[in-house]
View 1 (cartoon, rainbow, N blue to C red):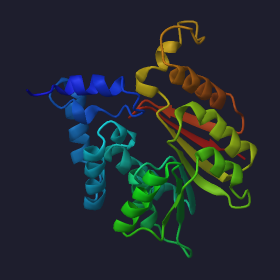
View 2: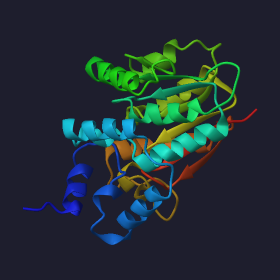
View 3: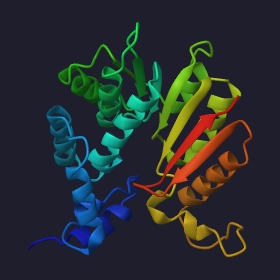
View 4: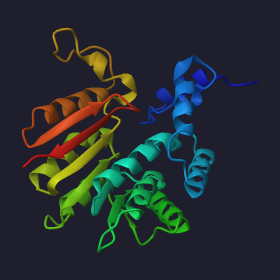
Length: 259
């Protein structure tokens, strides 16, 4: 029996998987799937080694694999890195290393006297080792360094003299505000450094929490969606940063330090 893409999408949305980039499952219905495939065909192609890593993760655990960004989002992240030219990058939430490798491909093309460095963290030791193997297979072990630790621990222990030009937050969604506050309160960002937070619209559950009055309601929505809304509000009123929230993928919040 053929499983309908919509049924797969609904199952994933209710599985606890944190990724909403499900358009690749919707090719047979609606306009979104077609738009996604069209955009993919006209964007930076996915490197073969990354495609192999993504496909292996999907075979290994199709639900957990939704933690990965999509190939289109990967191309977008690579483009951002090429545009910003960061020297020191930290990713919070590594999984199998797929998004870190997209970032690293952007770093590889940057001119400079010293090669850029990217650190990524994964608290599960087995998954961290898998990420290390994937990064080594991609030939980028000199650029990407995997830390077997939680995002909170990494931020608490990070040397505040080693400023971060870019932080990509894709770890525990309930702790985004904690991560943000650790970065800002510990003064970890370089001048005009940027934080990119993924999944800030969390399966489309965040924006319905706001009624016509503009006040968060106590209506339907997961606990994570409520926390994500409070985080978005927290960043919006913080005078230390500028921000733009993009309704693309599962919601991307781009935050830049202002001096």
